[in-house]
Amino acid sequence: MPEEVVLIVMSGMIMVTALGFGLMRTISRHLERKDTKSGAQHALETQLDEVKGQLEGVADLRAQVADIEERLDFTERVLARRGDGGRLPPSSE
Image (cartoon, rainbow, N blue to C red; front, side, top):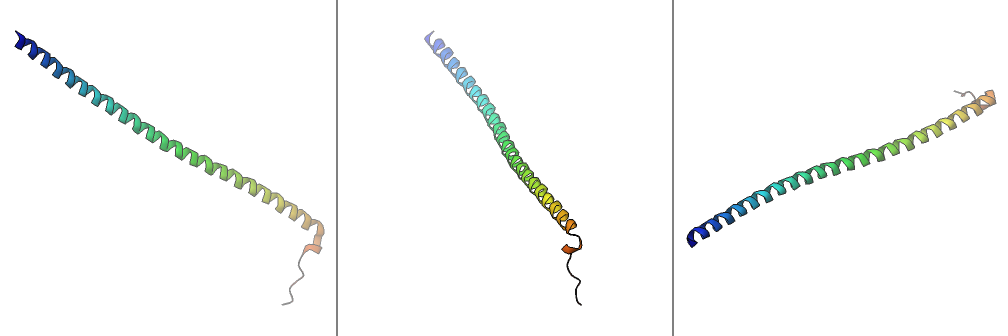
């Protein structure tokens, strides 16, 4: 009788151990997938930050172009008021 009890207890321990390892492997795979997703998400967030930075640079360039256009318009108006006085003399060639 005690041999049967030992055999049953040993079988139970082996089954619990096998189930534990299977469960651990499943949890491990789940966490790996979660890490992969967060890594991909991190890469996307990094790219998004880069694009935002580039857009800010484009906005700065647009402001500079608008400023240059205003200055050019002002210069054209000043030269137009001068009439012929603002033109270069004809070349002597």
